[in-house]
Picture 1: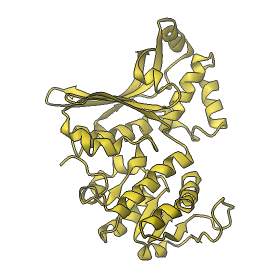
Picture 2: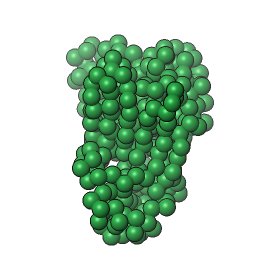
Picture 3: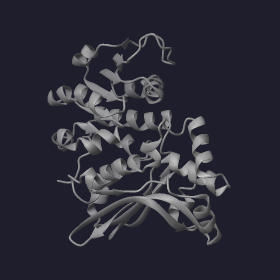
Length: 317
C-alpha cells in the first residue's frame, strides 16, 4: 500500500514514526505500507524521520499513492494539492479543521462518498467524530458544550494562578503552545472551525462556518478570572451548539462555569466535550486534544479504518 504524506512538521514526523511502529499490525492484515513520498518545502532542513524516508519538494509522487495523509495545515495550498486527488476517487486523511470548516463546498461530495477521513480534526486523538458519525445518530441530539483549544485552556489556567493575560500568553508562546501571532487560538477561530465540523454530524450536514458567533479570550482580565474563582467558578472558552427556534445556535465565547461542571473537571488541562442526546443521555469525552503523537494516533487509526474497509466520516444527509 503506497502512502503519500503532505507536510513533515511535528504531526507529520510522528505519523511516520507511528507507521513504523505499527508495521506489524498492517502486516497482520496482509498489508505492507510503503511511503512513496513526503512533501516538504525545504529539503535541506533536518527532520527526525525514519531512515530512508523519501522527502520530496515536487508533489508528482501523489499520482502513485493509494492514500494521502495531509498534515500541512493552511487552506489554499492543501486544497490545491488534494482536489485533483480526491476527484480521482482516492481517499484522503486529514486533521485540517480550517480547511474542512471554510472550504466545505469543495469537500462535501467526497465526504458523502466516504473518501474523507478526519477524526483528528477535532480533539486530535480523543475520538468524538467517530461516535457522532455512527452510533449517536440513533439518539435525538439536544446540545453540546466543549472546550476545544489547548492554548486558551493553558492561558486561562495561568491567569487562575495569578498571571495577567499578557504574561500568560507570552509563556504559552515561549512553550510553543500558541502560534505567532496567536489570533487563531485566542481569538476563538480555531475552536469555531472545530465546532463547525462537529455541527455537521448532529445539526445540519452543511452547517456553515459563517453561522458561528465567535468571541475569543482577549477581553478576559485577571479581575474577571479572580471574580469567577471567588464565586466557585472557572472561565473557559466554550464552544456551544443548541436549538434556536427551528434552527441551531452556534457560538464560541468565554463562559463562567461551576467548578463541578464536566468541562471544568474533565477539561481542567485537557480538551473535553459534553454531548446530550434525548435517548443516550449526557456523554462526556475528554483527553488530549493536541500534540504530535496524539494527533498522529488518530490519523493512523483512520488509515487502519480505510484498510479494513470502513468509509470515512460521512456528515448528515
